[in-house]
Image 1 (cartoon, rainbow, N blue to C red):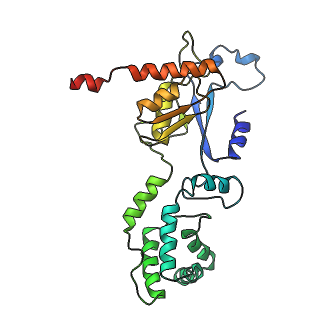
Image 2 (image 1 turned 180 degrees about the horizontal axis):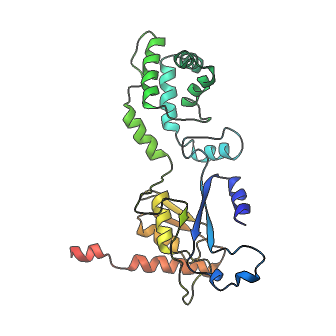
Length: 266
């Protein structure tokens, strides 16, 4: 089942991998392994994916990725436009840059790399070394001139702000095997409810403060509680009106709790 879902998601997103959530509780503890005709599954798969072009690599200008760019704009357009605008201001063509790059490297196989700095197709940010080389090359090809005046460190910071977040450390699970405890049974528990610690980890690792977290199958709304706890906005929906109402209630109850910091300040 996980493989089928992953294939469906891959039609719309760039699948980066899967995480194995090793569960301490579940139906597998009640099963009789010797009676099964398949392997016991004491785990659950989590698909890790990004939208196309979210990390500096675009699939091209056809199909879903192109339509996404039309709707949201190319993610790195401010940086691409800056590099391409400086090239146009110097009255230099991409071909000239590619030929100069070939002379520099001595290889014809890397000349296409120069085009990736100026085009949305497979766009990438130059390295600090290549950025300085572009500065010198622009000046040399145009017999002088002051181009690409922005500092590289500023460009790199803007690039990191635009690319998808991924914040993990040794303090949280940073491997593809997770061991979060499952949610114990209680009256009114959602059949597929995920532990709050797991959801908070996903929110922290995959978004920045004030970002918006979307859960299209929100169930009991624990993902919304996790988003609010981590300082994110939240949009949730569910096919069941009952669980939509439960989700609203759980988030509202958490938001109504007094802040420990506010109490300490008073």
